[in-house]
Amino acid sequence: MDNRLYIIEGLPCSGKSTTSAFVSEFLKSKGKVEFVDEGSGNHPADYEFHSFIDFLNLKDFSDDEQKKITAVSEKTKNGYIVPLAEFGGELFDKLIRFKIYDFLDWDKENPVILEKWRSFVDNSKDDTIYVFNCVFLQNPMCETMMRFGFNKDKSYEFIKEISDIIKPLNPAIIYLKNDDISSSIKKASLEREGWLEAVIDYHTNGSYGKRINAQGFEGYISCLEERQKRELSILSRLDIDALVLENSHRCWEKAYRTIKEFIG
Image (cartoon, rainbow, N blue to C red; front, side, top):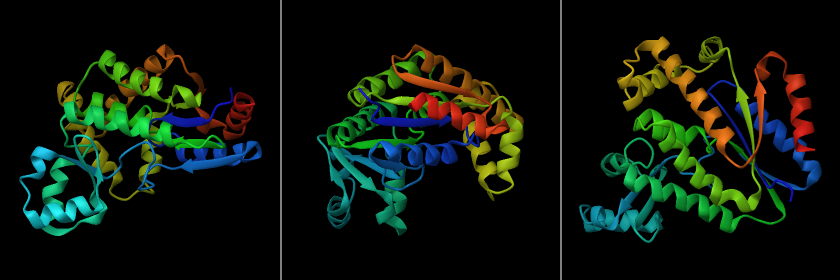
C-alpha cells in the first residue's frame, strides 16, 4: 500500500516548512496532493486556535453568549469546539481560558485531539495524498512534555494512539534531526520579530522547563535538545515508515535526493 500521509517533523527552525513544500510538490507526479502547513488556521487533523467548552462549562455563559458560541462551533458528544478567530472582546477573553492547547486540562484535551485525528482519517479522500508540516510529534510533545511535564513513556503512549488511528493511511514520517540547534534558532530569530522571546517564555515557564530550572536562551535550547532525543526515541519504537535526515540544513540538495529515494 502506498503512503497516503506524509508528516514532516523536527525542531523549530529545522526546515520543516520548506521540506513540507518540497515533498508536496514532488508527490504531485503521483496524484492529487493536499498540503497543510503549520498555522494554516483550519487543520483537518488538529486544532490550532480553538477552545473546547463542555456542556457543563457552557452553562456559565449567558444565554446570548451561548447562542453566539453554538452558532459557529462544532458540536461533539461532550461539548463544543469553538473557533476562537470568530470572537473578540470580552467573550474572547472568556473563551481563551478553554483553549485546547495551552489551557485545557489533559483529561479533556486528550480525547478531543484523538477524536480530531479519527475524524480526519474517516473523512480522508482515497484519491488524495496528504502532506502535513508537523502535528504528529511536535504538538503532542509540546503538550505532554513541555506543558504538562509528563515522562517519555506517557508521551509515547499518546503518540502511539495517534499512530494507530492514522494506520489506515499508511503514514510516513520524515524527521529533520539537527545537531546545530542553537545556531539554527539564532539565525531564524533574526527574521522573526518577537518570536524568540515568546518561545523562551513558553518553554522555561512550562512544567518541564521549571523542573530543570531552565532559564533564558540556554534553558530553551536545553528543552529542545531533550525534546529531540525523546522524539527520536519515540519514533524508533513506532511501527511506522520513517526517514531520519541528519543535519539537512548543511546540504539540502543531498537531503532532497534522499527524500526522493525514500518516497520512491
